[in-house]
Length: 249
Image (cartoon, rainbow, N blue to C red; front, side, top):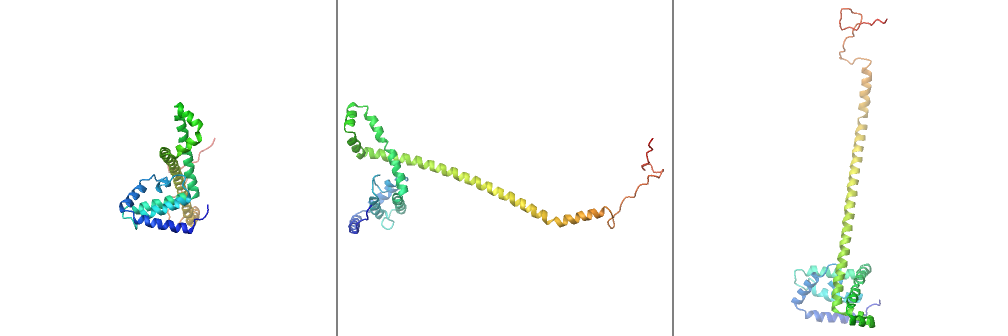
Protein backbone atom coordinates (compact mmCIF):
# COMPACT_ATOMS: atom_id res chain seq x y z
CA UNK A 1 0.00 0.00 0.00
CA UNK A 2 1.58 3.32 -1.13
CA UNK A 3 2.32 6.30 1.09
CA UNK A 4 -0.25 9.08 1.37
CA UNK A 5 0.32 12.31 -0.57
CA UNK A 6 1.35 15.12 1.88
CA UNK A 7 -0.66 17.72 0.00
CA UNK A 8 -3.74 15.50 0.17
CA UNK A 9 -3.34 15.17 3.94
CA UNK A 10 -3.14 18.97 4.31
CA UNK A 11 -6.32 19.40 2.28
CA UNK A 12 -8.07 16.75 4.38
CA UNK A 13 -7.04 18.51 7.58
CA UNK A 14 -8.38 21.83 6.32
CA UNK A 15 -11.67 20.21 5.41
CA UNK A 16 -11.87 18.61 8.83
CA UNK A 17 -11.20 21.90 10.61
CA UNK A 18 -13.94 23.58 8.58
CA UNK A 19 -16.31 20.73 9.26
CA UNK A 20 -15.76 20.71 13.02
CA UNK A 21 -16.13 24.47 13.24
CA UNK A 22 -19.74 23.87 12.23
CA UNK A 23 -20.37 20.86 14.46
CA UNK A 24 -22.73 21.66 17.33
CA UNK A 25 -22.37 20.46 20.89
CA UNK A 26 -25.47 18.28 20.45
CA UNK A 27 -23.84 16.45 17.55
CA UNK A 28 -20.72 15.85 19.63
CA UNK A 29 -22.82 14.45 22.47
CA UNK A 30 -24.74 12.21 20.08
CA UNK A 31 -21.47 10.84 18.69
CA UNK A 32 -20.26 10.05 22.22
CA UNK A 33 -23.47 8.14 22.90
CA UNK A 34 -23.22 6.32 19.56
CA UNK A 35 -19.68 5.13 20.29
CA UNK A 36 -20.56 3.97 23.80
CA UNK A 37 -23.58 2.04 22.52
CA UNK A 38 -21.53 0.13 19.92
CA UNK A 39 -20.89 -3.60 20.20
CA UNK A 40 -17.63 -3.69 22.15
CA UNK A 41 -16.03 -6.53 20.18
CA UNK A 42 -16.46 -4.93 16.75
CA UNK A 43 -14.13 -1.96 16.14
CA UNK A 44 -15.70 -1.37 12.71
CA UNK A 45 -18.86 -0.26 14.53
CA UNK A 46 -16.98 2.19 16.73
CA UNK A 47 -15.52 3.89 13.67
CA UNK A 48 -18.82 3.57 11.79
CA UNK A 49 -17.10 1.79 8.89
CA UNK A 50 -18.02 -1.10 6.62
CA UNK A 51 -16.10 -4.36 6.86
CA UNK A 52 -14.33 -3.77 3.55
CA UNK A 53 -12.83 -0.41 4.60
CA UNK A 54 -9.15 0.13 3.83
CA UNK A 55 -6.40 1.07 6.27
CA UNK A 56 -6.38 4.64 4.95
CA UNK A 57 -10.14 4.88 5.47
CA UNK A 58 -9.70 3.67 9.05
CA UNK A 59 -7.10 6.36 9.78
CA UNK A 60 -9.13 9.11 8.11
CA UNK A 61 -12.34 8.14 9.91
CA UNK A 62 -10.52 7.99 13.24
CA UNK A 63 -9.16 11.52 12.76
CA UNK A 64 -12.61 12.80 11.94
CA UNK A 65 -14.51 11.21 14.84
CA UNK A 66 -11.74 11.64 17.43
CA UNK A 67 -11.84 15.41 16.92
CA UNK A 68 -15.58 15.35 17.58
CA UNK A 69 -15.37 13.46 20.88
CA UNK A 70 -11.99 14.64 22.16
CA UNK A 71 -12.39 15.55 25.87
CA UNK A 72 -10.83 18.97 25.23
CA UNK A 73 -13.47 19.79 22.61
CA UNK A 74 -16.50 17.85 23.83
CA UNK A 75 -18.18 18.70 27.15
CA UNK A 76 -20.03 15.40 27.49
CA UNK A 77 -19.10 13.70 30.83
CA UNK A 78 -18.32 10.44 29.02
CA UNK A 79 -16.27 12.00 26.21
CA UNK A 80 -13.02 10.60 27.63
CA UNK A 81 -14.46 7.09 27.70
CA UNK A 82 -15.72 7.38 24.12
CA UNK A 83 -12.38 8.77 22.96
CA UNK A 84 -10.58 5.81 24.57
CA UNK A 85 -12.91 3.28 22.92
CA UNK A 86 -12.35 4.96 19.56
CA UNK A 87 -8.55 4.86 19.95
CA UNK A 88 -8.70 1.17 20.86
CA UNK A 89 -10.86 0.46 17.80
CA UNK A 90 -8.32 2.07 15.49
CA UNK A 91 -5.48 0.18 17.20
CA UNK A 92 -7.24 -3.15 16.60
CA UNK A 93 -7.95 -2.41 12.94
CA UNK A 94 -4.35 -1.35 12.29
CA UNK A 95 -3.03 -4.53 13.88
CA UNK A 96 -2.67 -7.12 11.04
CA UNK A 97 -3.46 -10.11 13.26
CA UNK A 98 -6.52 -8.52 14.86
CA UNK A 99 -7.80 -7.28 11.51
CA UNK A 100 -7.36 -10.72 9.90
CA UNK A 101 -9.22 -12.33 12.79
CA UNK A 102 -12.15 -9.90 12.46
CA UNK A 103 -12.34 -10.33 8.71
CA UNK A 104 -12.29 -14.12 9.08
CA UNK A 105 -15.42 -13.81 11.23
CA UNK A 106 -16.99 -11.61 8.55
CA UNK A 107 -16.25 -14.30 5.96
CA UNK A 108 -17.89 -16.92 8.18
CA UNK A 109 -20.89 -14.66 8.68
CA UNK A 110 -21.46 -14.39 4.92
CA UNK A 111 -23.15 -17.76 5.06
CA UNK A 112 -26.22 -15.53 5.22
CA UNK A 113 -26.03 -15.39 1.45
CA UNK A 114 -26.44 -19.17 1.33
CA UNK A 115 -29.49 -18.94 3.58
CA UNK A 116 -30.87 -16.24 1.30
CA UNK A 117 -30.52 -18.55 -1.72
CA UNK A 118 -32.39 -21.33 0.08
CA UNK A 119 -35.16 -18.88 0.83
CA UNK A 120 -35.37 -17.81 -2.82
CA UNK A 121 -35.77 -21.39 -4.03
CA UNK A 122 -39.28 -21.36 -2.59
CA UNK A 123 -40.33 -18.99 -5.35
CA UNK A 124 -39.89 -20.30 -8.92
CA UNK A 125 -39.52 -16.86 -10.53
CA UNK A 126 -36.93 -15.74 -8.03
CA UNK A 127 -35.14 -19.07 -8.42
CA UNK A 128 -34.90 -18.67 -12.20
CA UNK A 129 -33.68 -15.09 -11.89
CA UNK A 130 -31.07 -16.18 -9.37
CA UNK A 131 -29.83 -18.96 -11.65
CA UNK A 132 -29.66 -16.72 -14.71
CA UNK A 133 -28.00 -13.73 -13.08
CA UNK A 134 -26.70 -15.24 -9.84
CA UNK A 135 -23.39 -13.38 -9.68
CA UNK A 136 -24.93 -9.99 -10.29
CA UNK A 137 -27.77 -10.66 -7.86
CA UNK A 138 -25.42 -11.73 -5.07
CA UNK A 139 -23.36 -8.58 -5.52
CA UNK A 140 -26.43 -6.37 -5.43
CA UNK A 141 -27.79 -8.16 -2.39
CA UNK A 142 -24.50 -7.74 -0.50
CA UNK A 143 -24.73 -3.98 -1.13
CA UNK A 144 -28.24 -3.79 0.28
CA UNK A 145 -28.93 -2.37 3.72
CA UNK A 146 -30.79 -5.56 4.60
CA UNK A 147 -27.71 -7.71 4.03
CA UNK A 148 -25.38 -5.26 5.79
CA UNK A 149 -27.59 -5.24 8.88
CA UNK A 150 -27.90 -9.02 8.92
CA UNK A 151 -24.16 -9.37 8.39
CA UNK A 152 -23.44 -7.01 11.29
CA UNK A 153 -25.72 -9.01 13.58
CA UNK A 154 -24.17 -12.30 12.47
CA UNK A 155 -20.66 -10.96 13.09
CA UNK A 156 -21.76 -9.87 16.56
CA UNK A 157 -23.03 -13.37 17.22
CA UNK A 158 -19.78 -15.00 16.09
CA UNK A 159 -17.54 -12.58 17.97
CA UNK A 160 -19.60 -13.04 21.14
CA UNK A 161 -19.33 -16.82 20.87
CA UNK A 162 -15.56 -16.66 20.29
CA UNK A 163 -15.06 -14.24 23.19
CA UNK A 164 -17.14 -16.43 25.51
CA UNK A 165 -15.02 -19.47 24.61
CA UNK A 166 -11.84 -17.46 25.11
CA UNK A 167 -12.96 -16.31 28.55
CA UNK A 168 -13.99 -19.83 29.58
CA UNK A 169 -10.60 -21.13 28.47
CA UNK A 170 -8.86 -18.31 30.31
CA UNK A 171 -10.92 -19.14 33.41
CA UNK A 172 -9.87 -22.78 33.23
CA UNK A 173 -6.24 -21.80 32.73
CA UNK A 174 -6.44 -19.46 35.73
CA UNK A 175 -8.02 -22.19 37.86
CA UNK A 176 -5.31 -24.66 36.82
CA UNK A 177 -2.58 -22.12 37.52
CA UNK A 178 -4.16 -21.46 40.93
CA UNK A 179 -4.25 -25.18 41.71
CA UNK A 180 -0.62 -25.65 40.66
CA UNK A 181 0.42 -22.65 42.72
CA UNK A 182 -1.40 -24.03 45.76
CA UNK A 183 0.26 -27.44 45.31
CA UNK A 184 3.63 -25.75 44.97
CA UNK A 185 3.09 -23.73 48.15
CA UNK A 186 1.98 -26.84 50.05
CA UNK A 187 5.07 -28.72 48.82
CA UNK A 188 7.28 -25.83 49.91
CA UNK A 189 5.65 -25.88 53.34
CA UNK A 190 6.29 -29.63 53.66
CA UNK A 191 9.96 -29.20 52.72
CA UNK A 192 10.23 -26.27 55.11
CA UNK A 193 8.89 -28.32 58.03
CA UNK A 194 11.15 -31.22 57.13
CA UNK A 195 14.18 -28.94 57.00
CA UNK A 196 13.28 -27.34 60.34
CA UNK A 197 12.86 -30.79 61.90
CA UNK A 198 16.25 -31.92 60.57
CA UNK A 199 17.92 -28.75 61.84
CA UNK A 200 16.28 -29.18 65.24
CA UNK A 201 17.35 -32.84 65.37
CA UNK A 202 20.90 -31.94 64.42
CA UNK A 203 20.93 -29.14 66.97
CA UNK A 204 20.14 -31.56 69.82
CA UNK A 205 22.68 -34.15 68.67
CA UNK A 206 25.32 -33.25 71.25
CA UNK A 207 22.76 -33.27 74.01
CA UNK A 208 21.50 -36.69 72.98
CA UNK A 209 25.02 -38.10 72.74
CA UNK A 210 25.85 -36.70 76.18
CA UNK A 211 22.67 -38.20 77.67
CA UNK A 212 23.51 -41.57 76.16
CA UNK A 213 27.00 -41.47 77.61
CA UNK A 214 25.63 -40.59 81.04
CA UNK A 215 23.18 -43.46 80.77
CA UNK A 216 25.91 -45.91 79.87
CA UNK A 217 28.06 -44.72 82.78
CA UNK A 218 25.16 -44.94 85.19
CA UNK A 219 24.74 -48.64 84.41
CA UNK A 220 28.16 -49.46 85.92
CA UNK A 221 28.50 -46.89 88.70
CA UNK A 222 25.98 -45.20 90.94
CA UNK A 223 25.53 -41.57 90.45
CA UNK A 224 26.52 -39.43 93.39
CA UNK A 225 23.73 -39.30 96.01
CA UNK A 226 21.72 -42.03 94.25
CA UNK A 227 20.12 -44.65 96.58
CA UNK A 228 19.90 -48.17 95.24
CA UNK A 229 17.80 -51.02 96.78
CA UNK A 230 19.67 -53.70 98.81
CA UNK A 231 20.52 -56.98 97.18
CA UNK A 232 18.46 -59.94 98.37
CA UNK A 233 20.24 -62.91 99.90
CA UNK A 234 18.95 -66.25 98.67
CA UNK A 235 20.55 -68.12 101.57
CA UNK A 236 18.55 -66.43 104.38
CA UNK A 237 15.89 -69.04 105.50
CA UNK A 238 14.01 -66.56 107.69
CA UNK A 239 12.96 -64.33 104.78
CA UNK A 240 9.77 -65.61 103.19
CA UNK A 241 10.25 -63.45 100.12
CA UNK A 242 13.76 -64.72 99.47
CA UNK A 243 14.09 -66.83 96.40
CA UNK A 244 15.39 -70.29 97.41
CA UNK A 245 17.28 -72.52 95.07
CA UNK A 246 15.13 -75.10 93.41
CA UNK A 247 16.38 -78.63 93.76
CA UNK A 248 16.43 -80.48 90.51
CA UNK A 249 15.73 -84.22 90.59
